[in-house]
Image 1: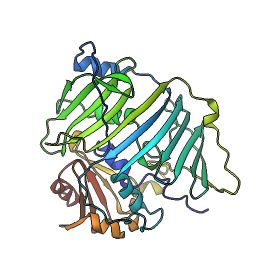
Image 2: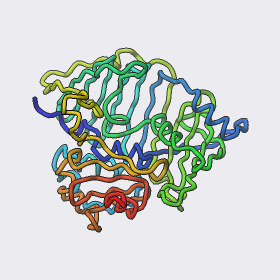
Image 3: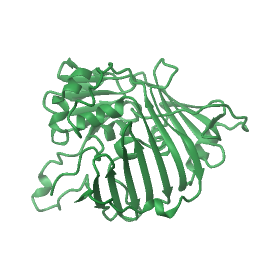
Length: 364
């Protein structure tokens, strides 16, 4: 069976970045006159949100302080490579339309300059389609454990565009005594009044200065998330609704039939974390594809073993342009996230300075 195009697989580094709360974000526009609420009240409003049916347009922008790429650099790179997927995510802007009706009906359309890529889920059936290549991939989601809904592999929409709700969940999970929580001025996002919930890490070891979540004043739905680098006023990265309509979209949006002439593949979904049965001897084999996590909260570092990192990532010419040689490998340093590609093939990611990743890589 041919491997599905990696343009559909979340780039190996991206889920780890999201898990550390490093890469993603967004902001709204305008001001709203709202009833004052405390941080605890806005957190409670956010936690109680139960919006499951909507249609909206998302915009993602990234201003991470990366070096400027030569004209045509991305176009000249290897088509579909993991390195290109990561670099395209870290640079420029992208727009996505999202349609949802409950946890099992989803359609996401991601628009690039010259093409469109779609994910369509109806129940346990998922289709991935690339309009330019006329390639479709179909998979059946595995049965979920009791009490858990089956979900798409990876994080966010195709090509790594997350929704504000997904990001808000991950950042709010970091809130503890290491986080200062405040409520800013009321804002208007996608035509809806919202509270700005401001999360500011107290740790000096993270690159993140604050995360601002626009919480819908009526429903508690996160409308935007903005990540600000330490000492910077403008967000380093953001994801926000620019249009939003609550209510169930047309059911026909959650059906997909490959167009005539499309190349269609059937693939098995990844099931990370599964271990062989105890007592078979196989359970003593290392789980080479599983990441390791060091630290907690805003200082978390995620390390991917060499077996989980595509070899072409470190060898790609674009990676060589965007990284610099450091002790132990090559590093990509941005305003809010650092990536270390070690000489032995591992990848370490965190919203932390390079020195922290080097210490973790060396076991210090």
